[in-house]
Structures are given as C-alpha cells and as structure tokens.
Length: 93
Image (cartoon, rainbow, N blue to C red):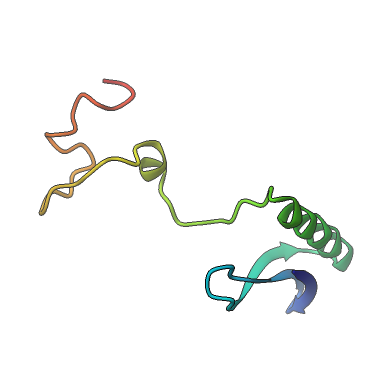
C-alpha cells in the first residue's frame, strides 16, 4: 500500500493505492480538498498508517437508516421508511 499527493487545479488530493484481498485488483482511493501540499502530505501519511493498523474506515454510501436498522426489510412496493409492519420498532416508538 502506498500513497501520493496530486495537484488538480488549485487543490491537492491524496491518492491511496491498495489491492483488493479477494481479487488482487488494484484499488485507488481519492481524498480531496487540501489547500497546500504540506496538508495533503500530512493527511497521506496519516491515512497510510491508519490503513496499516486497520483503523481506516472506508467511506460508503450507507444511509443513517440502513446503519441504525440493518435488519429492516421492505415489502415489495412499499417505499415508506416506516412500513406498517415495522411501526413500533423504531427508537422513538
């Protein structure tokens, strides 16, 4: 695993390269929004160390509802977040 910094327009980005353990395919993760090269390099070092320790939490597109209620099952055609079958099982109910 290795990291590098890249400049695009007026911002610096951190690129972390790693391998998928299951397939062996190369994966690149981009972290953006650093104003200076020094900030980007410091963030790169921290990210590489966190990944080596196993402390790195990869960003995903999981919603808060999916995180809080992973076992929620929606019935076909029901698009309500509080389906009748699920009412009474939330944190405020």
